Amino acid sequence: MRPMEWMRKAAPAAALGIAMHGLPASAQTPSGVLVVGQIAEPQALDPAAVTAVNDFRILMNVYDGLVRYKAGTLEVEPALAESWEVSDDGTTYTFDLREGVNFHDGTAFDAEAVKFNFDRMLNEDHPYYDTGPFPLSFFFSAIDEVEVVDDQTVRFQLSEPYAPFLSNLAYPTGLIVSPVAVEQHGQDFGRNPVGTGPFQFVEWRPNEAVVVERNPDYWDGAPALEAVVFRPITDANTRTAEMLAGGIDLMVEVPPVALGQFEGEGFQVVEQAGPHVWFLILNAKEGPFADQRVRQAANYAIDKEALVNDVLEGTAEVAAGPIPPAFAWAHNDAVEPYPHDPERARQLLQEAGAEGAELTFYVTEGGSGMLDPVPMATAIQADLDEVGFDVGIETYEWNTFLGQVNPGLEGKADMAEMAWMTNDPDTLPYLTLRTEAWPENGGFNSGYYSNPEVDRLLEEARTSTSQEERAELYKQVQAIVHEDAPWVFVANWKQNAVVSDRVEGFELEPSFFLLLGDVTKN
Image (cartoon, rainbow, N blue to C red; front, top):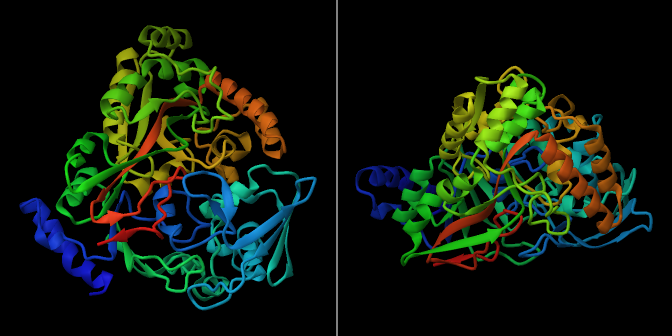
């Protein structure tokens, strides 16, 4: 039985069985087919057009980049490029491409394909620029030109040295898509993905499943699995029930309260530290949070230790700023988390004349890295109300939530939950804290924070070729941002997953991606 045929027959019965009996025999998944419980429906399967780790977990199995992260690390190693050279001034990168690689549609991967990919994202005059928007093209804003030297050699000319360049090439935004498939499907390419990866796309049934099957000709060795089925199960309790019942084989982002249910036989809990920040975006442009004192008051009011220990069951640590401690070389250990100090919060509100300030709080039901967002929001609301705020919660499904938050909070909300998993210390602050990253400029600074000194430090850090100098600049950024308090800094999470004991070879990655090429299932 093909994976999609199994899905069509088993999934409705499994759902009914879980609701009525708890452990449906019909939910058992076939050998060789890995069924993954995802936290949300993907937005698209075009790597240049999406931002959520939920989507990346699928994409990393369909596509390859020129480089990739070495297993278990955020260090870069060869992938579609076998090797590369960097000029002494750090502005020219020349890649020697792997020979004999084809896209899943049978067309050749070569230097022209690489040029097509980056020109599509960065050149407004490109004939397929309208297949965007490309929200993370920021990652490659330093590229001046992509030059085809010959079929197997491609050269990137940068406008200035750009320290995160190789790391960003390994990120999903740098994955290489089939130019012929883009030309064939146009704006529908995100529903018809074609890459060079270990699995090839079969079908996307909205709100039911994305199915990919083994690529037998994969350049790095065909995967052992016959297929992978990614099922969006947005409700965490339902996802947990499906895992317990055998309806899914792998569950990501396990609710902390559910972890204890998987301690017995039949399951393995997997954990892996990584660069993650869970925070509240504060609307610094208008309303109560335009006043720094009110933003600081919110940081003092919220009991982050209680959130981490009680709501998240100790699966995270309290955050102190925008650069997580997983980036040990760039993290400022001298910047400590805001303590829980309700009296200080009330004092600041009184000084600002903001007692009783009404706040609209955007909350999501669940999403990439969002941990346990509804219970967290409820606890946050109670802490803020206790010191004198009047907080009203508006809750949205994940993709709807992103559609509300990413365009900016102006005229809509005072604060919103958010989480980012990042690949370099540059990524999160550059995309979310610079003045030029306000939403109208294509960035993710949804709270409209602006500090010229932070802007300057971030620009210097990304163009420095010295890691020591970059570290010092990022540490200065953390100290300033902590004082300015454009966010409430809440938690750094240790990611988790549960797999069935039928599954072998699965590891979580610091990148937060799912890499399934070496996984087996009996």
